[in-house]
Image (cartoon, rainbow, N blue to C red; front, side, top):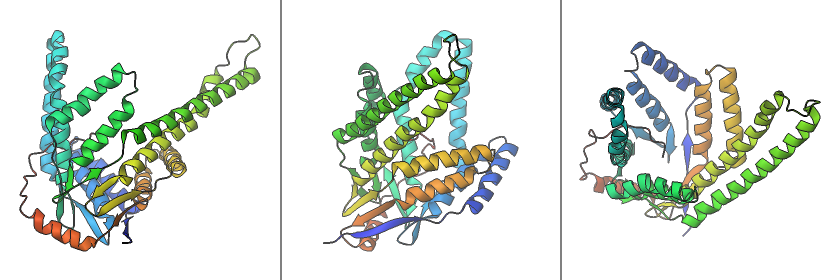
Length: 341
């Protein structure tokens, strides 16, 4: 059977989002940060509501009051930590050790909050994960990375992606990722080759520039480091853009729901161009073009996203709606923390 192709669409506009963005900033300043919880909900809801699949938008359902309570709780812990560390410096290491086993729990709660407040066609997303698995992925693997001098990093990235995707669900249907560890190592291996080629190129330029603009006594011209930094930055952006696009495509293209496969077609060159021009526009405009840059990036990323279904997607969604009615999850007890996964 020929799969049905369903592209995602983004309808957000820079002018509309600028109004939300500037009001969010002003009110957050006036209220000494209290309004930032409402600002986050307004921002995320705008992007969700302007992301469409089969002519239906996504929705973000979080309560700003609950977000504010979570932030105040985190702030209270930070104040307590700073106070204890200032009064009893010898206890600081103990506090850090006590926080380590709490960190995986915080990640699980943050992912739950984000998923349970996300919906499509009135069906909530869900997240349920085992604490010990989170402890291994977010505490054990970083330790392994240190002991292997970074060689375990691709495995950590794969495990992190798998932890998030395999423990997520749309209604009652669980997501699944089938990408292998070798595929992640292949991406970082190629990125390493690009980085080595970059270093060799910059080294060649360095020698040529030193010969051309070096001082007569053989010392280094003070302008040389700045010139080399300007030369190195585009190459570094290329490496970052390559890793981002390839890891994103790899993860999404190997993610499945029952009868559904997701597809991502990000291109390294276009992502790098967006990064560069967005950064330039933000600098030149003294930050006023941040909304334009965010809309521009979201439009490209979502335009590259689609799903292929081997059955009737409407029937699948209807079935999920019927089955998900009895889940009855309580949404209000989760933390809202950006963890960048």
